[in-house]
Image: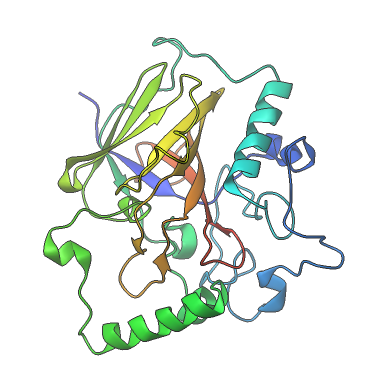
Length: 288
């Protein structure tokens, strides 16, 4: 029997992947020299060195915490995904795994929520930093929501037995268990027994006419050796978590998952994950 292990949610881009910012399909938002001023430069006092909203820096074994795609990121999740795919293709990928060659993610995995914005959802972020990430309209709604949270008059959807929407799925309690096959990966959470289905068989997203907005969205992806890259869209709008901003139904995300060696003596295993959010409520992609 596999012993319990730990997931560490963490923004991370491997050094090998840093070249993708220059690959075909990379479309950074704006011109870094004239039109684009990254949030971390606009608000250097609001967070740690790697994020405007984080409370402190966080060490990792597989990480560049810089926003992918240049100083202000890619223009869209699609541009980000296509750049990663182009980089993998340039190196002979994507990897077509068999059942025998897939990475070993067996076991029950828990979350490590001890490290500021190392929590993928960003629950270690400051209110000021989160507000700086929002458009004026979304910021006004966020401040109004905070008044209700502070007055204890806000209603958490979880309190009504509604499932956690994605990406709040990352931070809710309960162990995780994942089942990998060559054409599809099931990423499971014991919280309401939810499974995300990530299709890695080469299919595209449903067309605009057919895609709907669901709790966990619709995910496609590919393997780059032992790295699972995921593009998710069609997500139901909702709050990120208690006392956090709302996400719109235009949200799309890019994730990269990789199992790495443990960093602490109390870890039996470790999966590091990066998450980049693209949403019309955000003035810049949010990378954790």
